[in-house]
Length: 146
Image (cartoon, rainbow, N blue to C red; front, side, top):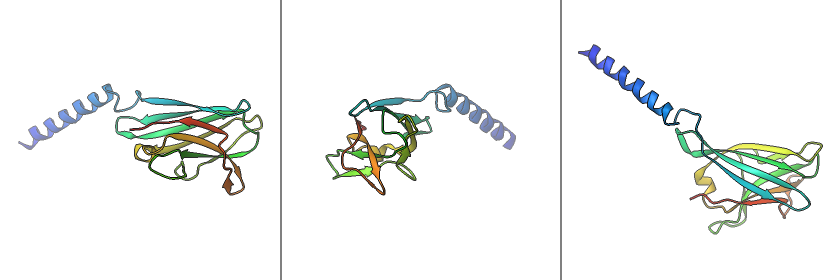
């Protein structure tokens, strides 16, 4: 009797695994949202929110790529413009900072949950002045997560 139960469990697990990969749960097919980041003086960028596969549909990998910023300068990434919250909130797991290279290009990658993104309406990049960020963003783009 236990041999039949074991065989059935193995068959069920195989069918479930194959159907999960065929439906995109196991990788390969990811949803992505691209947000244009606009700034003054030729500064531009983009933020790409990509779902972390079917196993974690409310988790995103966020990649912010910028160009045209001041070379060799530290910047920080923030969530801002919330109707429910005041001010802004740093974006990132361990840090929200990155540094541009000698030509003014930079990249920042982090993980972020849907729940953290929901109340905010924009993603902003600020120039760092020591430990504090400046008051006016150098790049900004609108976001909307329901």
